[in-house]
Image (cartoon, rainbow, N blue to C red; front, side, top):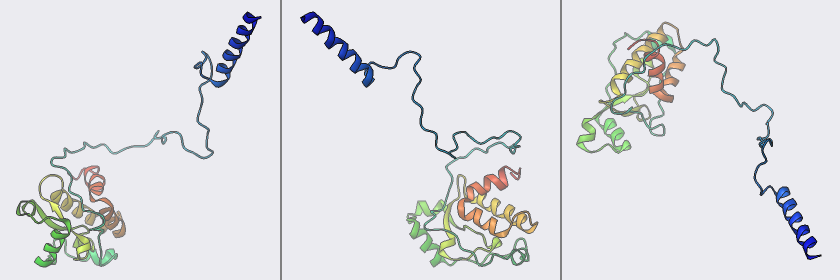
Amino acid sequence: MIRSGALLVNALLVSALAVSGCGGARPGAATAQAPVVPGEVTQGPDLSGVKLPDFVMPLIHGGVSMPEQKLTPGAVTTTDANQVCALPAHSAVPSVSTALQTAVYDEYGYTSPTTLHKHTVDWLVPYSLGGAAVKANLWPVAIAGTGYYQKIQTDGILREMVCRREITLTQAQQALETNWYSAWLRYVVATGHL
């Protein structure tokens, strides 16, 4: 009787373990799958037949100089491409007062002589693309690394594209306000303007 009781207890333990799943996965058993959500994309985009631009990514030295969005969101005086394109290609840019430049540096916390020497105040949306000479459109861009020179190059290419009506003035302004570096990669590097 004791022996049959022990067998009964063992049988109950084995069946309890099997029901609770503590015994591990059985060979050949299906693995659990996450539930499928209707409309959810579970694969990457289909790029068959898509021609991507052929370009070599330039080497980046010294980091990329970017404005802080909350300090320099950008500001424009016009969205009229005719007005912008009527300006001479190399028209004089209105000067930014020393007081305004100092306010921009102070806002970014660039007050040491060493930091000031490594930066210059630049327009996020340039005058040649309808940018305004206000603190919301000015930022201290690094002279070394990827910064000042690439930004100036981007400004020029975007102006050419706006005046050839390849993109709208608003598109060019928003590209710079959103991320000038992405605009440089898209409109300068990927199009072979380097």
